[in-house]
Image 1 (cartoon, rainbow, N blue to C red):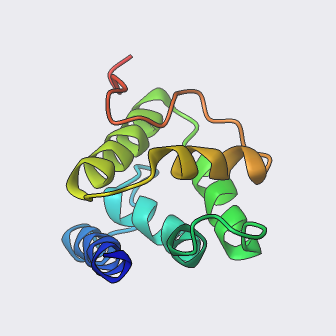
Image 2: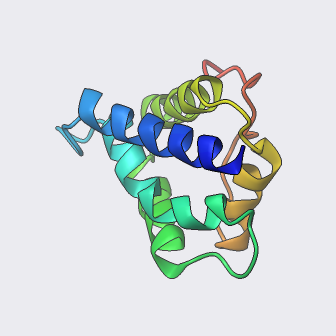
Amino acid sequence: MAINMNHTITLAIIGILLLSVAPWTDGALTCGAVAQSLVPCLNYFRGGGIGSVPPGCCNGIRSLNNNARTTPDRQTVCGCLKEAANSLRNINIGLAASIPPKCGVNIPYKLDPATDCSK
């Protein structure tokens, strides 16, 4: 079962990257840029959150947070994260939500598929 979840997560991230290949375009964030920032977190996530968060994961989260300064950009990131969470089965939302604080990053919304990204 763990192998299927790993494949599902990997395929979903690859799918997001392929669908939205333009990273930072005219200051606007895309789901591809969001996914690129979070790819270094995959091994930590696959490992069930055991050990410390890899530096590349924290760097990606910090970079994403620093580039999402405007409300529209934050809404885009929120929507991309929700889309990814809703498309993945057996995702551990609690583990995903625990990563930003472990990296010293405070995001202005709750990481949850039920979050209303328009607010």
